Image 1 (cartoon, rainbow, N blue to C red):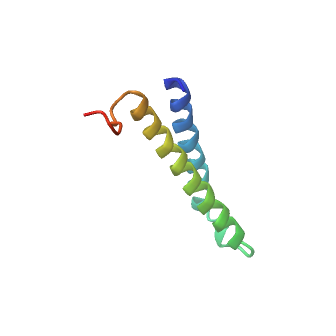
Image 2 (tube, one colour):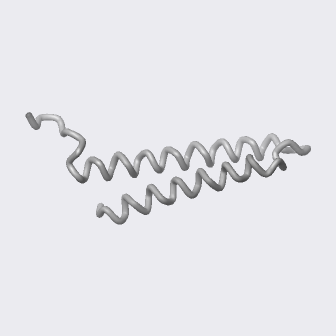
Image 3 (cartoon, rainbow, N blue to C red):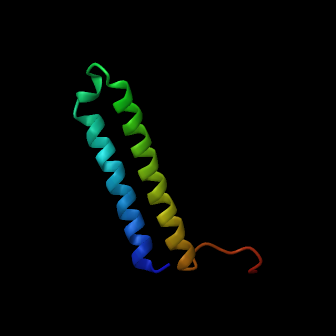
Length: 72
């Protein structure tokens, strides 16, 4: 993958996490039937942060900053 694709994965993950945070911050989560909204926000937040983490790890590995096994 190219640097641009890893960068887009990071950006998409951060955007997803931001959308989830805004959903929690609106205050509509505490309304009746808000339990499913809390779970959805938790899943989006976790998924967004994991996507960003995978993008960062992939970019660092592609740039050679993460040592590979067997290279000594």
